Image (cartoon, rainbow, N blue to C red):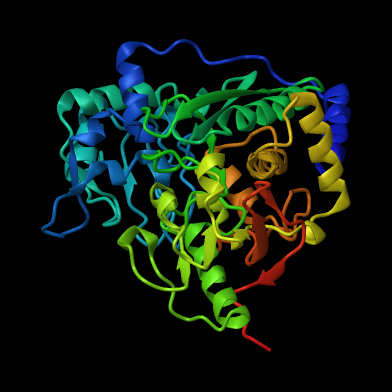
Length: 446
């Protein structure tokens, strides 16, 4: 379903459904500190604390085990791999109950003191050991008291970066990227168009812009492009970067390493050139692969040049004019693989944003990342959480509403579309050719 049809669907829902308008009260200082611990936010008490798992004689960083990662964003205790974490709402903790299962053990209701003992030593309110998967934290008594105070608000609390009327989305931008303004404008225009018809199930999208080296705000729900130090469970949709180091990062298209791999394969197939020189190391050779924009001024001595688009966008026009006549650029998309509906939707947003033809590919990347994030939010529904947004993004299959080949994700697949388009670059005119050669390093040569 395209973004325009989704907008119509949301409009119809807003006309027929009345949502509750209650938002949670302002948290007290101790509750706010407890919230930071629960969600593992930066600067929380978890940053300096350690934790141990079972009988392991190793202290691990406590920030790797925020409560929400196992117990859920509202303490519901989602089951995973046979482990059922406890419901951490204050009501559930203070109510005595019999545990269903093989042990059949019972426990009295928790008090603040017994809760602190459970967190610090792994002993429950009845004196029994908790499951070995539950970390033992060396938090202070004040820290556990803060966490206990927050649990009274947990059932009604909204996820970080969200309230009853707003979802805050971070746009993390490269400090050196010249097209940053156009990138911001096109995302703002897309959000404005959606907000004009009611947003996401009654919530408006609010864009928060930060440079990659700025501290990451704690009150954001999701992000476009990876910030340098993302929260543990922060869903991120972007196109930059490489590899799959962070499971919460969904990349639409091939990153730098995949673009370089495509260029190497192109050089071997089309130019019969296996050895590629590195301009940064001032290596001799006919063909160079430019992997660092800082070395762009050193490519004039080579007959042929290969440049990932992720690098080209960070090189000024004057320096590009020194590129050799035979320069090839790896693009993460090909026009003939993009649906006409996506092209038309992107054109409408560009017209609204008032962005020019310069850096149009960067605009397409930002627009596509935002469209995928919106799609994930819509599929997750009104009761969206970070966890449910991640799951809905994992469920995208052959989604063609973006300026790339259709994207698909999965629980173990965080790159939406494979392959790169190798096109010629006219240094004199600073122009990329419209058509090129499609290279997919993951596909065997026929």
